[in-house]
Structure formats: C-alpha cells, structure tokens
Length: 178
Image 1 (cartoon, helix red, strand yellow):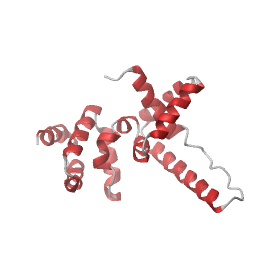
Image 2: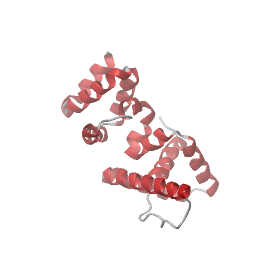
Image 3: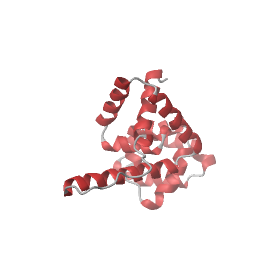
Image 4: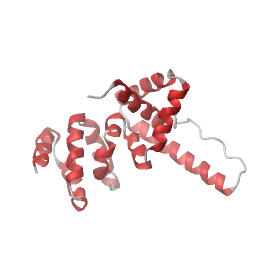
C-alpha cells in the first residue's frame, strides 16, 4: 500500500507532466539564434504532445489531475521545487510515460518493455485497453512484460489487443502462469 507521501509524489508528477506543461498558447518566437529557435520549437512540440495526451484522458483522470494540481499549488515552494527536481531526474521515457495518465504513468517502469515501441495502428486500441484495465491487472501485465523476451513482446501486445475484454482476466492469469 502506498504511503500518503508516495501518493502525493504521483500527483505532483502528474501535475508536472500534464498541467504545468500545457500552456494554451505557445510563447512567441522572437528573433533569436538558431539554437534558441530549436529550443523554442522543442518546447512547443512538447507542449503539443502534452495537450494531446490531456485530451486523450477521460474526465475522471482529468479531474484527478486537476485535484492534484490544486493540492500541488498549496504546497510550500521548497516542497514544489523538490518534486520538480525529482521529476527532472527521471529519464525521458519515464517522464513521457506519465502522459498516459495516473494509472499507467505510475506503472510505466513495469509496462515500458511492452509499450515503448508501439506501431501507430496498435496505439489507439492498446491505449483504450490499458485505460480500461484495473491497476491490479496493469501490475500483472507489467510483470508479464518484463518476463517476456524482447523478440516476443510484439506478439504479446497483439494478443492483448485481440483478447476480448470479458476474457482479459483469464488471459492475464494464463500468461502470468507461464
């Protein structure tokens, strides 16, 4: 079971990734050096990615993040800075994993072997399935993903997409027993 501090860390991370980075309008590009323009373009791309991820979340997840943003805003500045520093120390893959929302983001390190390189035609159905899954099912899937050899992960992901929702629990159990 998570401690209250760990839960707050999860929420603070969500705020950092989704809310703080989603400016409604990108900052204007002034006449600057080519290097600064590249940084500005990268920043705008990241903001678009965050906005797109935000729009893909359901209302309950968005509300959970809004609540986290409110709680985060009430923290003392030094605590906010500490959370920002913790987030900055995560590798880019884990930071981006949080774009998938609170449930999936919290389990990203376990799920990343299965989700890091998803063909475009599998992305939408896979995300729909993952968002439907219970956190316990996601944890089981994470264990399965880590045990699955890299060359078999594409097949595993396709099986997950193909299994009917009503059979998903049994499929996870069967895959977990292997």
